[in-house]
Figure 1 (spheres, rainbow, N blue to C red):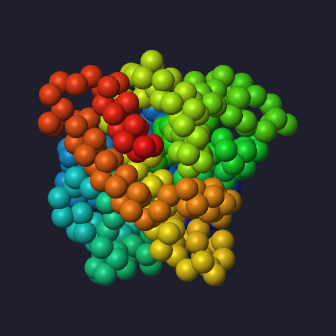
Figure 2 (figure 1 turned 30 degrees about the vertical axis):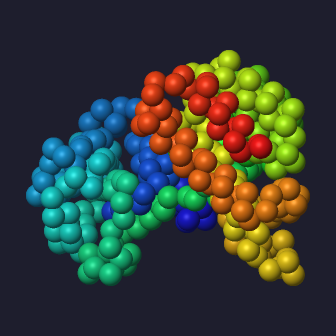
Length: 335
Protein backbone atom coordinates (compact mmCIF):
# COMPACT_ATOMS: atom_id res chain seq x y z
CA UNK A 1 0.00 0.00 0.00
CA UNK A 2 2.68 2.51 1.05
CA UNK A 3 4.77 1.83 -2.06
CA UNK A 4 1.81 2.31 -4.38
CA UNK A 5 0.84 5.49 -2.54
CA UNK A 6 4.38 6.85 -2.90
CA UNK A 7 4.44 5.99 -6.61
CA UNK A 8 1.14 7.76 -7.30
CA UNK A 9 2.17 10.78 -5.21
CA UNK A 10 5.51 11.04 -7.02
CA UNK A 11 3.85 10.93 -10.43
CA UNK A 12 1.53 13.77 -9.40
CA UNK A 13 4.48 15.83 -8.17
CA UNK A 14 6.25 15.12 -11.48
CA UNK A 15 3.15 16.29 -13.42
CA UNK A 16 2.42 12.83 -14.82
CA UNK A 17 -1.37 12.76 -14.82
CA UNK A 18 -4.05 10.20 -15.70
CA UNK A 19 -7.66 10.75 -16.77
CA UNK A 20 -9.26 8.75 -13.93
CA UNK A 21 -8.18 8.12 -10.33
CA UNK A 22 -10.21 5.82 -8.12
CA UNK A 23 -9.15 5.83 -4.46
CA UNK A 24 -11.02 3.44 -2.18
CA UNK A 25 -10.69 1.57 1.09
CA UNK A 26 -11.44 1.56 4.79
CA UNK A 27 -8.51 3.84 5.67
CA UNK A 28 -9.37 7.39 4.63
CA UNK A 29 -5.96 8.94 5.34
CA UNK A 30 -4.21 8.00 2.09
CA UNK A 31 -7.33 8.80 0.06
CA UNK A 32 -7.39 12.32 1.51
CA UNK A 33 -3.64 12.75 1.06
CA UNK A 34 -3.76 11.85 -2.64
CA UNK A 35 -6.86 13.87 -3.46
CA UNK A 36 -5.43 16.90 -1.61
CA UNK A 37 -2.18 16.52 -3.54
CA UNK A 38 -4.04 16.55 -6.88
CA UNK A 39 -6.10 19.54 -5.76
CA UNK A 40 -2.94 21.42 -4.79
CA UNK A 41 -0.51 20.47 -7.57
CA UNK A 42 -2.37 20.13 -10.88
CA UNK A 43 -3.77 23.64 -11.15
CA UNK A 44 -2.34 26.98 -10.08
CA UNK A 45 -4.30 29.39 -7.89
CA UNK A 46 -5.97 31.21 -10.79
CA UNK A 47 -6.82 28.00 -12.68
CA UNK A 48 -8.42 26.50 -9.57
CA UNK A 49 -10.98 29.29 -9.55
CA UNK A 50 -12.28 28.16 -12.95
CA UNK A 51 -11.30 24.54 -13.48
CA UNK A 52 -11.51 22.82 -10.09
CA UNK A 53 -14.81 21.25 -9.08
CA UNK A 54 -15.31 19.47 -5.75
CA UNK A 55 -18.59 17.59 -5.55
CA UNK A 56 -20.08 15.21 -2.99
CA UNK A 57 -21.45 11.77 -3.67
CA UNK A 58 -24.66 12.25 -1.72
CA UNK A 59 -25.54 15.25 -3.92
CA UNK A 60 -24.88 13.86 -7.41
CA UNK A 61 -25.69 10.97 -9.70
CA UNK A 62 -23.38 9.06 -12.05
CA UNK A 63 -24.88 11.07 -14.92
CA UNK A 64 -23.97 14.34 -13.17
CA UNK A 65 -20.38 13.16 -12.71
CA UNK A 66 -20.03 12.11 -16.34
CA UNK A 67 -21.49 15.39 -17.64
CA UNK A 68 -19.08 17.38 -15.44
CA UNK A 69 -16.14 15.26 -16.60
CA UNK A 70 -17.01 15.76 -20.26
CA UNK A 71 -17.19 19.55 -20.00
CA UNK A 72 -14.19 21.49 -21.28
CA UNK A 73 -11.68 23.39 -19.13
CA UNK A 74 -11.82 27.19 -19.21
CA UNK A 75 -8.34 28.40 -18.22
CA UNK A 76 -6.12 25.33 -17.79
CA UNK A 77 -5.09 22.53 -20.16
CA UNK A 78 -7.05 20.15 -17.95
CA UNK A 79 -9.86 20.53 -15.45
CA UNK A 80 -9.96 18.65 -12.15
CA UNK A 81 -13.11 17.10 -10.74
CA UNK A 82 -12.90 15.56 -7.26
CA UNK A 83 -15.84 13.45 -6.11
CA UNK A 84 -15.72 13.17 -2.31
CA UNK A 85 -17.74 10.62 -0.32
CA UNK A 86 -18.25 8.71 -3.59
CA UNK A 87 -19.48 5.67 -1.67
CA UNK A 88 -22.80 7.52 -1.45
CA UNK A 89 -23.21 7.64 -5.26
CA UNK A 90 -26.00 5.33 -6.38
CA UNK A 91 -24.99 2.69 -8.95
CA UNK A 92 -21.44 3.97 -9.15
CA UNK A 93 -20.51 0.99 -11.34
CA UNK A 94 -22.29 2.83 -14.19
CA UNK A 95 -19.16 5.00 -14.38
CA UNK A 96 -17.80 2.14 -16.48
CA UNK A 97 -18.98 3.77 -19.67
CA UNK A 98 -16.95 6.91 -18.90
CA UNK A 99 -13.87 5.00 -17.67
CA UNK A 100 -13.79 3.14 -21.01
CA UNK A 101 -13.62 6.42 -22.90
CA UNK A 102 -12.55 9.27 -20.58
CA UNK A 103 -12.00 12.87 -21.54
CA UNK A 104 -8.31 13.65 -21.96
CA UNK A 105 -8.88 17.22 -20.79
CA UNK A 106 -10.21 16.12 -17.37
CA UNK A 107 -8.72 14.56 -14.26
CA UNK A 108 -11.58 12.75 -12.56
CA UNK A 109 -10.76 11.80 -8.96
CA UNK A 110 -13.15 9.42 -7.18
CA UNK A 111 -12.76 9.19 -3.37
CA UNK A 112 -14.65 6.09 -2.26
CA UNK A 113 -14.11 6.02 1.51
CA UNK A 114 -14.55 3.63 4.44
CA UNK A 115 -15.27 0.61 2.26
CA UNK A 116 -13.78 -1.10 -0.74
CA UNK A 117 -15.03 -2.09 -4.14
CA UNK A 118 -15.67 -5.80 -4.54
CA UNK A 119 -12.61 -6.93 -6.50
CA UNK A 120 -14.56 -9.76 -8.12
CA UNK A 121 -16.87 -7.41 -10.02
CA UNK A 122 -16.38 -6.41 -13.65
CA UNK A 123 -16.32 -2.78 -12.51
CA UNK A 124 -13.36 -3.33 -10.16
CA UNK A 125 -11.47 -5.29 -12.80
CA UNK A 126 -12.04 -2.53 -15.32
CA UNK A 127 -10.82 0.08 -12.84
CA UNK A 128 -7.62 -1.88 -12.30
CA UNK A 129 -7.01 -1.91 -16.05
CA UNK A 130 -8.07 1.56 -17.17
CA UNK A 131 -7.76 3.89 -14.14
CA UNK A 132 -5.26 4.63 -11.39
CA UNK A 133 -6.86 2.33 -8.83
CA UNK A 134 -5.61 2.60 -5.25
CA UNK A 135 -7.03 0.62 -2.35
CA UNK A 136 -6.27 1.70 1.21
CA UNK A 137 -7.00 -1.01 3.80
CA UNK A 138 -7.42 -0.28 7.52
CA UNK A 139 -4.27 -0.99 9.48
CA UNK A 140 -4.28 -3.36 12.45
CA UNK A 141 -3.29 -2.05 15.89
CA UNK A 142 0.06 -3.83 15.78
CA UNK A 143 0.90 -2.19 12.42
CA UNK A 144 0.51 1.39 13.67
CA UNK A 145 3.93 1.77 15.42
CA UNK A 146 5.69 0.68 12.23
CA UNK A 147 3.52 3.09 10.21
CA UNK A 148 4.44 5.96 12.55
CA UNK A 149 8.14 5.13 12.20
CA UNK A 150 7.89 4.95 8.39
CA UNK A 151 5.83 8.15 8.15
CA UNK A 152 8.35 10.07 10.27
CA UNK A 153 11.23 8.71 8.19
CA UNK A 154 9.46 9.77 5.00
CA UNK A 155 9.27 13.33 6.36
CA UNK A 156 12.97 13.22 7.25
CA UNK A 157 12.65 12.59 11.00
CA UNK A 158 13.79 9.78 13.27
CA UNK A 159 11.58 8.50 16.09
CA UNK A 160 12.29 6.07 18.92
CA UNK A 161 10.39 2.77 19.22
CA UNK A 162 8.94 3.76 22.59
CA UNK A 163 7.66 7.02 21.09
CA UNK A 164 5.87 5.06 18.34
CA UNK A 165 4.13 2.90 20.93
CA UNK A 166 3.21 5.89 23.10
CA UNK A 167 1.56 7.63 20.16
CA UNK A 168 -0.27 4.44 19.14
CA UNK A 169 -1.72 3.85 22.57
CA UNK A 170 -2.72 7.49 23.08
CA UNK A 171 -4.06 8.23 19.59
CA UNK A 172 -5.31 4.81 18.44
CA UNK A 173 -5.46 3.81 14.78
CA UNK A 174 -6.71 7.09 13.28
CA UNK A 175 -3.88 7.91 10.86
CA UNK A 176 -5.17 11.41 10.18
CA UNK A 177 -5.14 12.25 13.89
CA UNK A 178 -1.67 10.74 14.31
CA UNK A 179 -0.32 12.69 11.33
CA UNK A 180 -1.81 15.93 12.67
CA UNK A 181 -0.15 15.41 16.06
CA UNK A 182 3.16 14.54 14.41
CA UNK A 183 2.95 17.79 12.44
CA UNK A 184 3.12 19.65 15.77
CA UNK A 185 6.47 17.99 16.34
CA UNK A 186 7.72 18.53 12.79
CA UNK A 187 7.03 22.26 13.06
CA UNK A 188 8.89 22.61 16.35
CA UNK A 189 11.91 20.32 16.16
CA UNK A 190 14.94 20.06 13.91
CA UNK A 191 15.35 17.00 11.69
CA UNK A 192 18.65 16.24 13.37
CA UNK A 193 16.81 15.43 16.61
CA UNK A 194 15.21 12.07 17.30
CA UNK A 195 11.58 12.23 18.41
CA UNK A 196 11.69 11.03 22.01
CA UNK A 197 9.04 10.46 24.72
CA UNK A 198 10.19 13.73 26.30
CA UNK A 199 9.47 15.70 23.11
CA UNK A 200 6.09 13.98 22.74
CA UNK A 201 5.25 14.90 26.32
CA UNK A 202 6.23 18.54 25.75
CA UNK A 203 4.60 19.17 22.37
CA UNK A 204 1.67 16.72 22.30
CA UNK A 205 0.90 16.36 25.99
CA UNK A 206 1.25 12.60 26.42
CA UNK A 207 3.02 11.81 29.69
CA UNK A 208 6.19 9.77 29.15
CA UNK A 209 5.86 8.18 32.61
CA UNK A 210 2.12 7.95 33.13
CA UNK A 211 0.63 6.25 30.11
CA UNK A 212 -0.82 2.88 29.17
CA UNK A 213 2.50 1.71 27.72
CA UNK A 214 4.19 2.19 31.12
CA UNK A 215 1.15 0.68 32.86
CA UNK A 216 1.48 -2.49 30.78
CA UNK A 217 5.14 -2.71 31.74
CA UNK A 218 4.40 -2.44 35.47
CA UNK A 219 1.59 -4.99 35.18
CA UNK A 220 3.85 -7.35 33.25
CA UNK A 221 6.51 -7.10 35.95
CA UNK A 222 3.91 -7.29 38.75
CA UNK A 223 5.32 -4.00 39.98
CA UNK A 224 2.49 -3.00 42.34
CA UNK A 225 4.07 0.28 43.42
CA UNK A 226 4.55 1.37 39.79
CA UNK A 227 1.06 0.24 38.80
CA UNK A 228 -0.66 2.15 41.59
CA UNK A 229 1.45 5.23 40.95
CA UNK A 230 0.17 5.33 37.36
CA UNK A 231 -3.34 4.47 38.54
CA UNK A 232 -3.31 7.46 40.92
CA UNK A 233 -2.27 9.69 38.02
CA UNK A 234 -5.08 8.33 35.84
CA UNK A 235 -7.66 8.96 38.55
CA UNK A 236 -6.42 12.51 39.17
CA UNK A 237 -6.54 13.16 35.40
CA UNK A 238 -9.85 11.42 34.90
CA UNK A 239 -11.00 13.33 31.82
CA UNK A 240 -7.97 12.17 29.82
CA UNK A 241 -7.95 8.65 31.26
CA UNK A 242 -11.51 7.39 31.86
CA UNK A 243 -11.95 3.70 32.59
CA UNK A 244 -13.89 3.23 29.37
CA UNK A 245 -10.76 4.35 27.47
CA UNK A 246 -8.18 2.52 29.62
CA UNK A 247 -9.74 -0.95 29.42
CA UNK A 248 -9.59 -1.33 25.60
CA UNK A 249 -5.92 -0.35 25.75
CA UNK A 250 -4.81 -2.89 28.37
CA UNK A 251 -7.15 -5.71 27.29
CA UNK A 252 -5.01 -6.58 24.22
CA UNK A 253 -1.92 -6.89 26.44
CA UNK A 254 -3.45 -9.67 28.52
CA UNK A 255 -5.16 -11.20 25.51
CA UNK A 256 -1.80 -11.44 23.70
CA UNK A 257 -0.17 -12.77 26.85
CA UNK A 258 -2.79 -15.52 26.94
CA UNK A 259 -1.99 -16.39 23.32
CA UNK A 260 1.73 -16.31 24.07
CA UNK A 261 1.31 -18.90 26.84
CA UNK A 262 -0.04 -21.34 24.24
CA UNK A 263 2.82 -20.93 21.74
CA UNK A 264 5.44 -23.73 21.71
CA UNK A 265 8.48 -22.68 23.77
CA UNK A 266 10.79 -23.57 20.87
CA UNK A 267 9.31 -20.82 18.65
CA UNK A 268 11.59 -17.99 17.56
CA UNK A 269 10.87 -14.29 18.11
CA UNK A 270 9.55 -13.72 14.59
CA UNK A 271 7.04 -16.58 14.92
CA UNK A 272 5.93 -15.36 18.34
CA UNK A 273 5.57 -11.77 17.14
CA UNK A 274 3.41 -12.90 14.22
CA UNK A 275 1.24 -15.09 16.46
CA UNK A 276 0.49 -12.40 19.05
CA UNK A 277 0.47 -9.49 16.59
CA UNK A 278 3.33 -7.33 17.87
CA UNK A 279 6.63 -6.00 16.58
CA UNK A 280 9.44 -8.51 17.29
CA UNK A 281 11.11 -5.78 19.36
CA UNK A 282 8.43 -6.26 22.07
CA UNK A 283 8.51 -10.04 22.29
CA UNK A 284 10.94 -9.89 25.22
CA UNK A 285 8.35 -7.94 27.25
CA UNK A 286 5.80 -10.72 26.75
CA UNK A 287 8.39 -13.37 27.55
CA UNK A 288 9.14 -11.66 30.86
CA UNK A 289 5.47 -11.05 31.72
CA UNK A 290 4.57 -14.68 30.97
CA UNK A 291 6.76 -15.73 33.90
CA UNK A 292 4.49 -13.80 36.27
CA UNK A 293 1.06 -15.06 35.14
CA UNK A 294 -0.28 -18.57 34.75
CA UNK A 295 -3.15 -19.48 32.43
CA UNK A 296 -5.78 -19.49 35.17
CA UNK A 297 -4.84 -15.98 36.31
CA UNK A 298 -4.87 -14.64 32.75
CA UNK A 299 -8.31 -16.11 32.09
CA UNK A 300 -9.53 -14.51 35.32
CA UNK A 301 -8.05 -11.13 34.32
CA UNK A 302 -9.76 -11.26 30.92
CA UNK A 303 -13.03 -11.92 32.75
CA UNK A 304 -12.41 -9.00 35.12
CA UNK A 305 -11.71 -6.63 32.23
CA UNK A 306 -14.91 -7.66 30.48
CA UNK A 307 -16.90 -7.19 33.70
CA UNK A 308 -15.56 -3.67 34.26
CA UNK A 309 -15.87 -2.74 30.60
CA UNK A 310 -19.62 -3.20 31.02
CA UNK A 311 -19.61 -1.29 34.33
CA UNK A 312 -17.60 1.57 32.83
CA UNK A 313 -20.47 2.08 30.39
CA UNK A 314 -22.97 2.47 33.24
CA UNK A 315 -24.36 -1.08 33.36
CA UNK A 316 -24.66 -2.67 36.84
CA UNK A 317 -22.37 -0.09 38.38
CA UNK A 318 -24.93 1.54 40.72
CA UNK A 319 -23.50 4.98 39.93
CA UNK A 320 -20.10 4.09 41.42
CA UNK A 321 -17.60 6.85 40.50
CA UNK A 322 -15.25 6.00 37.66
CA UNK A 323 -12.19 6.31 39.88
CA UNK A 324 -13.57 3.80 42.38
CA UNK A 325 -14.35 1.34 39.61
CA UNK A 326 -10.79 1.72 38.35
CA UNK A 327 -9.38 1.01 41.83
CA UNK A 328 -11.61 -2.05 42.21
CA UNK A 329 -10.64 -3.42 38.84
CA UNK A 330 -6.89 -3.03 39.33
CA UNK A 331 -7.08 -4.48 42.84
CA UNK A 332 -8.71 -7.61 41.40
CA UNK A 333 -6.14 -7.78 38.59
CA UNK A 334 -3.13 -7.43 40.87
CA UNK A 335 -4.28 -9.65 43.77
